[in-house]
Length: 270
Length: 311
Image 1 (cartoon, rainbow over the protein chains, first blue to last red):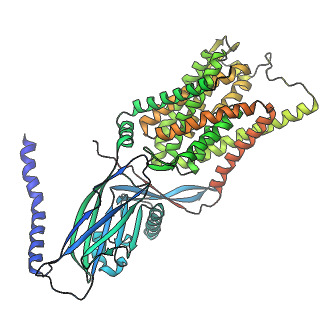
Image 2: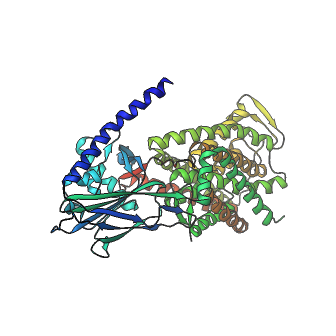
Image 3: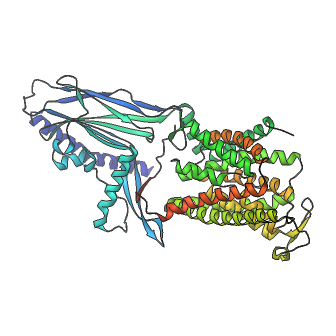
């Protein structure tokens, strides 16, 4: 009872700073003459992984909407589309020589890094906006903040090696990608980009964020949810394996015994 | 044709897996071994995560040993009492192995332990087999008569306490080495994804002096039950048994084994053992090279699993 009575005001209190920020943002937006807004959508809200899944594309398209308050600016519009997957802690290990053999020695744990990250931009990321803005919105892999999860034995000077290795490996596995010049403008205000989702993408809730930039400032942004989910047999199997793991194990054994027995019967020679 | 593996969470070429199962099945039928020590490395080298390879191969071994057990049972060539005693050790060893497997996985040294164990066991066993088969070939050439079993002869094993009588094997021996042997094989099976038949058979023949005609069936039964336990334990502790991958391997394996067995009848025993020794040694050497040569990529990324929200 008391817990419930206490929880409510605390929740309201927590909302206050958020509301203040929102109010400030509204005030700023009202004051400035930025009147562009974004209307965007995805070709699908859910990517279904079925037994024949070998990767797919998700098309992000949108329109830059202008109203009467829009002033003409000399710079062209820039679009950045970021597709990011569920976040998780990732351990990056480095092999070193120990008693003549190569073993995992140092490791660095990066906290809450996206399991999938695709950055599509009109121009190379560093040309779009100043660094702080790029870092805040993860526009460009170079600007991805890799926070270290816990105290590590890796000296400060060595950390950039781990960071670089992490990005290199993620790029190589296809889970991270950065492409520029891949956003097609169908008209002056209509744009479209196709983001490949490789075969090995992790399942979960994704976020697609579209940013409209111009001359180094962020004019508008929009976030769209995207879900990558196993469906049908794949979903049930995964669920069964995790929910009723003992029964799943027994089923695997029964299947094996049956297959073996069947083979024995079919190929019986004596 | 690509098929998506629900637990490994990646697509794989169905015919490649089927082919690997078939090729290893062929060799296992040819040499009368489970083939886990070949299949697990093959899966690892083809990009399946080691944890999933090891756990899934455990279930594949159940399938391949079942058909063998059925055949030997029909011919009454299994010592059930001996198998049960081996199993007590086997299940204990396998539980300990699965427990250690989980710890090594979190510490990040699972791959190292798997590689090191492969190098150690495969080089040792392969070396011994190579030596033995070459000696047998030389002996046969010189015309000497070879006897595998010398019933009158006893070694240190027969001096241990807690003796038990095994009528089917015509054996009166302590249960300590039997449980110990079962435990070691069960442990290795759980950690390495191997049935351990290629270690069990010589140990039963040379250490315990079990008659050769009883050994294979009994060892197969022991492998079957230990690997079944390992499958269930792996499924419970790490959820790493991929049933789709397992099924593909099983079907390929049991078919390949039939052709292998037919081929095996055309070759002589010492020739078979020599080939098997070379095969075992080469897998060991392959792992050793991986450990000794500086890798191209020193770094590796391993992500914590993403828990899918329950539906």
